[in-house]
Image (cartoon, rainbow, N blue to C red; front, side, top):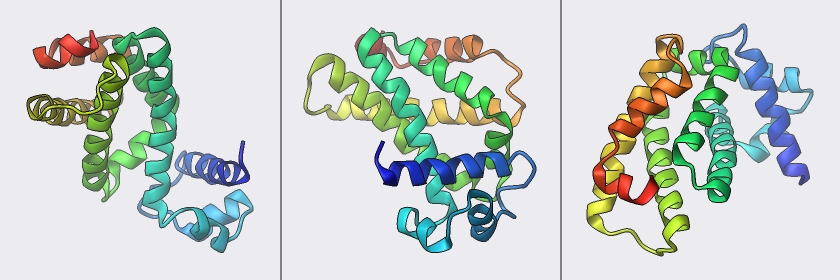
Length: 181
């Protein structure tokens, strides 16, 4: 693992640990640096702000499941793993959902979800470009998937990952189902 990735992982672990007891809104970069044992300049050499580190965590974690999808072509399993990841870091995600920045995170995660779907389709079918009709379906489904996920997190993740995944799969656009299932 590259030194840069180790530093990012150190900050992300500190953030996840700190959000066990602190709210995201009240967390400062200095507190994050103190907890990680790394300096402020090191933080800013790797992240723009504390929102950027949340994006990095989400990208890094979900990328693992996309890579696994490339091996087994089981889309519901990939999505279910994301939900299990959320449960494993429940306090972290609840803190993010309660923050003032939750709408910004929602927009970011909608774009990420759309890209996640698109990458899976491109990988599976070897296409280099997705047509406008499929792009619209991806946009629509990404919005729905992220909002269902956010509601599930805000409500304490009471439903199992299997039941939430089932809801998402049942509500996929037929066009997307043709590509992913």
